[in-house]
Length: 198
Image (cartoon, rainbow, N blue to C red; front, side, top):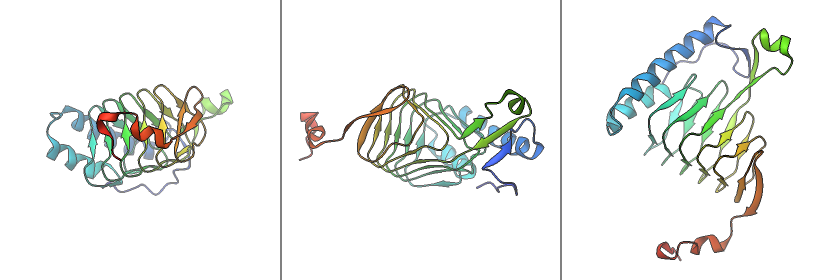
C-alpha cells in the first residue's frame, strides 16, 4: 500500500499545478500501466499490483483491465468486487466500495470538481469530494458517478446514468441526471424463473 503525502485531499490544486500531487499521480499511473500490460488472466500478478496500489482490498477482487486511477491509495474495495473493462476512478478524495459490488464496462467515478468561475479554473483550483458505494450495488455500463455521491445498499444504477446526487438503498435509478424510478421488490426475485432462489 502506498504512503499518502502529508497534504489535505479534500481541497487542492490540480496535479499539473502541484508538484507533490503530480509525483503521486505519476506513481499511480506507472502501476496502472503495468497492470494494464499484464495478461488479463494473470490473477496473481494483478492482485500483487492492486495490493500495492489500492488503499484497501477485500477477497475475490477482479478489476478487468484497462483500469486507471489518480492516486490509488484513496480507493477501497470490499469482498467480491468485480469491475468490467475501462474502469476509471479519479480519487482525489476517498472512493469506497462495499461487498458484492458489480461495475459494468466503461464506468467513471470522479471525486474532482473544477471551479465554475473561469479565472479560478485557469489557476487550477479544484476540490475533491468522497464517493461511497454500499453493499450489493450494481452500476450499469457507461455510468458516471460524480463527486460527493453516496449510493445505498442493494441499489441498481442503470446504464448510461450520470449520478449527480446521492441515491438511497434498495432502488433502481436511471437517467441523466440519475433519478429513482422504483423500489426493488419481491417480484424481482422471480424475474428470471430459471434462477428462482425461493
